[in-house]
Picture 1 (cartoon, helix red, strand yellow):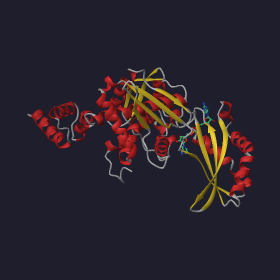
Picture 2: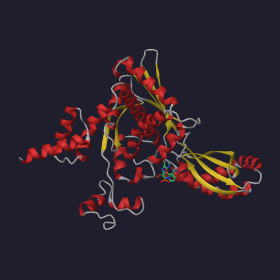
Picture 3: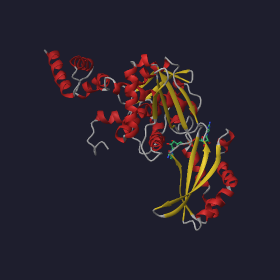
Picture 4: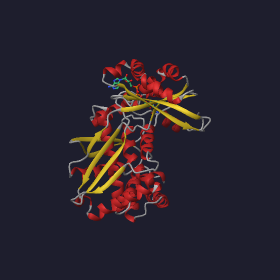
Amino acid sequence: MKEFASLTDEEVKTLANTGGLPAEVADHMIENVVGGYTYPLGIAMNFRVNGKDYLVPFALEEPSVVAAASNAAKMARVKGGFTVTNTGPIMIGQIQVVNVPKPDTAKAKLLSRKDDLLKKANEQDPMLVSLGGGAKDLTVKKLSTLKGPMVIVELIVNTGDAMGANAVNTMAEALTPMVEEITGGRVLLRIISNLADRRLVKATAVFDKETIGGEDVVDGIMYAYAFADVDPYRCATHNKGIMNGVVAVGIACGQDIRALEAGAHSYASRSGHYKPLTTWEKNRDGDLVGTLEMPMAVGLVGGAAKTHPTARANIKVLGVKTAIELAEVMGAVGLAQNFAALRALASEGIQRGHMKLHSRNIAISAGATGGLIDMVARRMIEEKRVRFDRAKELVAEFSNEKKQ
Ligand code: NAD
């Protein structure tokens, strides 16, 4: 690899450094491991969720996200913080059956054998069942597709403190012979659905109008929300802001963030139109009320949450005891992040705060090192010219001064 990519010794050393993840553990997590990749880890402050205080670990590369979340959480505290509910850790496993001679009859037969099918599914995971989880229900739907009619069996599984993909996939695969025998068709795909619409969190918070900057800010945020509600171009960015926080906590706590993203955006599109994952309204006192509703398929057992030592330590910092509690905190974070972005956008714009925090990154990419980083960043902020070309000039200027 060194030869192929003409890497220097220094670059090889950088790639090989696995940081807080022992190389041996990394090697067992994925394939063809050559090293590690480290993100900055920041702690979002001020979060009160369902009456409990949390320090929330964020792992991400984007400046201003942690500051924005902390600031939003501080404002939410004035009216008691975030209240979050959930629908339980319920995931859906899909079994696709093709070439079914009589799809409607097959559907009825599958439903009449529901108890046998659930029993077979639960035999695959006695551990989960002993903890109160397991396959709880089964539904069947008929789809008209490009390849003709198909029967889809959906297994409804309580995955407890697991995200549940492996658990559900194992159950779905185990049902193959029975489903084929009952339907007379051929089973093809057997896999969890990431549209986890039975595993939702609903977070709400009241933001005191005076605390957030007055009536104009409340109205500004409602206009911003109204824009996202009808325009997918704006809505994509609205929801991206929510995911800034959700994904950062997800990475810090060893979650499958692809699953979180897939769940979020498919849920946002469930009506056939891409919609915001939050709603914003004004209450009788003129305060702003935000609500976020989205799937949150996270776990504390299985996956990197258990294998990655940094994820384990972060979960300890966060102090969550169940997957549901983790999901609820992440829902509060998503709502806080959305509020912070909309408040900035609807008032002074995000660039002032963002670029201030971004100035150090720009200084580094322009070649500043050591004490020069802060010197260049500070000067750019003073001049209100946080730009790469200016950073380059300043690096040269300060370096020359040093030499003289
Ligand atoms: P897992 O199989 O490692 O752990 C789940 C198992 O842990 C359960 O089946 C149960 O037997 C046991 N368990 C012990 N204590 C438990 C408790 N308190 N609650 C629940 N279960 C308990 O992991 P998983 O959560 O089934 O699968 C998650 C992994 O699957 C992730 O790494 C994810 O990236 C991956 N994955 C995702 C997809 C997808 O999202 N489409 C597809 C395939 C795999």
